[in-house]
Length: 431
Image (cartoon, rainbow, N blue to C red):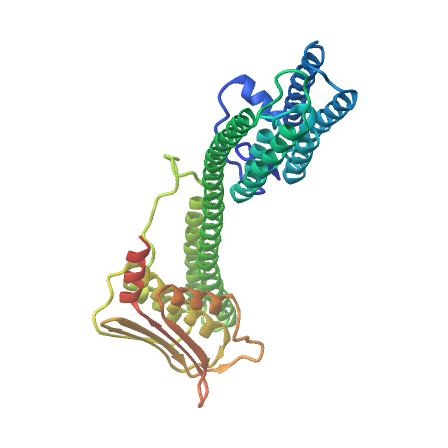
């Protein structure tokens, strides 16, 4: 976790790299990198001038300074300087110590100090809160009033003692100084809070962008996995079925066996072409001029050829289409893949089917795809698997539903209902 360069007491989110502009100037960047050195220097400068002023007053012959006043004043000034070093970590404690120093040292120092409390009050606003700063401001004015009263009542000088008018004027100047410090501190605090909120919002946007990119990558991987499964599962099932059939009739019907093996080779070449095209799209960059040739995805017009391949493999498929076909390419691809997967499962798992019906019903607002077969399910067949999951995902993309299960009199039925109008409106809303 890295520290926020704009607001030192906040941290940037893990894994988020925000290029925040650097503060202008080499000197400002140096002090920002060394906060403890900054605090130590501020405390030392204040202590040096405070002690120096006290020593200068002590050596003036016309002013009587008692030893206890010198000791108390020096000790209080030193305590105040040490307290300033911790103003970032303990702003309330430091301000409280400055009140004590001001009140206790009032007989020796005279009017309330115009630097010690303002520095601590500024730190309270910046490192705690604006509300805490205004509370500290009120208490600081009260502490300054007490110190001014003590200075006027207990101070004893041979010449020019502090009159009440002068004490009141000094207290007014002290209060005005605190007001100015508060206004400056509140302005700086608000500006830093605003910048910090912008950085937090930018960090949130970065995280959302990364999450959206990951979701898009997962969605694309899922889509590619569906396509690869459809291609491999369909092609291998057809090839295995044709190869087994050809092997069974080699001795009795050599011409049909040769034709079957030819269809095996054709199915294999088609599968290799589809896989090469898909893998080429994955491996090539978008700017590659020698990338694979783009080809359209299969649609409803390719269903007769698909069904003919299954017929060649021995599956008695019958296609029925009612209504006007949809013009949405995405929906046509979904229909093609659903029919392909359903026929592949029938070829793989159905035992002795006599009829396999593919029924496409196109209505206004919905499309129904129904694939039924009357064959018994093979004992080793499983109703689950990647194919059924892929069909459910395709149907879900079109705001539809999928029902798959055995029939009462034997066989298997797959019914998918797609809603192209709703899907189109959702796409328009997202875009």
